[in-house]
Picture 1 (tube, rainbow, N blue to C red):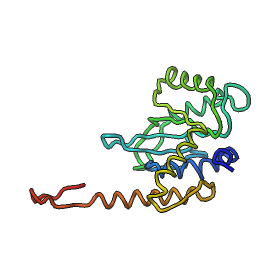
Picture 2 (cartoon, rainbow, N blue to C red; picture 1 turned 180 degrees about the vertical axis):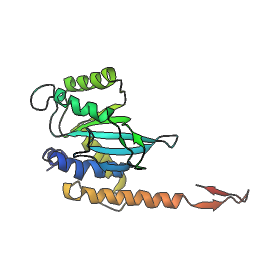
Picture 3 (cartoon, one colour; picture 1 turned 90 degrees about the horizontal axis):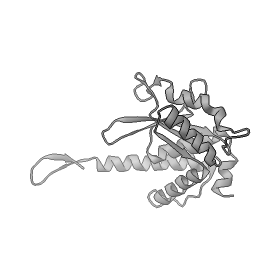
Picture 4 (tube, helix red, strand yellow; picture 1 turned 90 degrees about the vertical axis):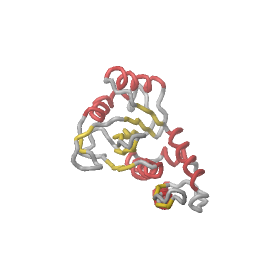
Length: 202
């Protein structure tokens, strides 16, 4: 069974816990947190990253199972209230646990395909009607590409010959996180500049 078939079979909960959150951590996201539940306010997963100026950008994944269209059971228009709550509701910054913040980047993610009509509606609603330009959409093809690229990049670095499996993906991603942490610690050592006699960072 290929990656596509394995992801399609997942429930929304398992997609979030066993694939999305480990993937975000392995990609270098900071403060990743499962928001799904009573306090989610439209945000299934929170994560952050630092921009060029060292400022934390507050982001969320809005996750749905299956194909998303502008009709039927997975009509994207039925998600309008939750999407609006995700971008407009204030919440406590998970990084410092005190500062009130709002989402700055919104990612719509699904384990199927999202058709053009649904994409256009989402863009119209967020960018034009809600004046929220920081939107991206990841369907199953995007998720597969992220996973494949991650495995190709890190298999040799962490000494693995890993093939994607739902039950082991989280532990594989944890190894990548540890590798990156250890690598950062090595490169962040102080050395003495032989010419100036100064301590510098590399």
